Length: 63
Image (cartoon, rainbow, N blue to C red; front, side, top):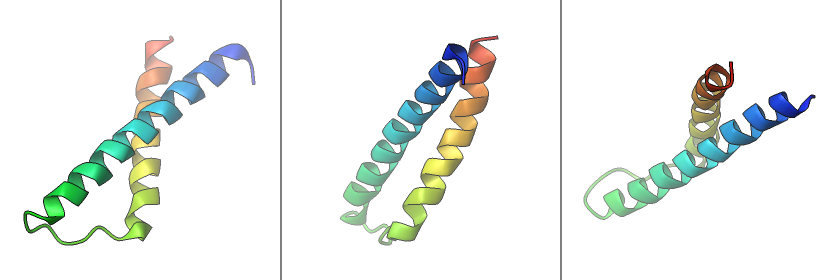
């Protein structure tokens, strides 16, 4: 990969980690308010979805 592709991937992965952390921590606090428990199998699809969306936005940002 060249430097631009590495930068785009790094930004997308960083955004997906942050987004997943916010969603899972928020859901954890919401469980005390009555939300159903979030299963561990749901974390990776959430991260993958956010990574895909953020990859589109970050690649668009650097064009």
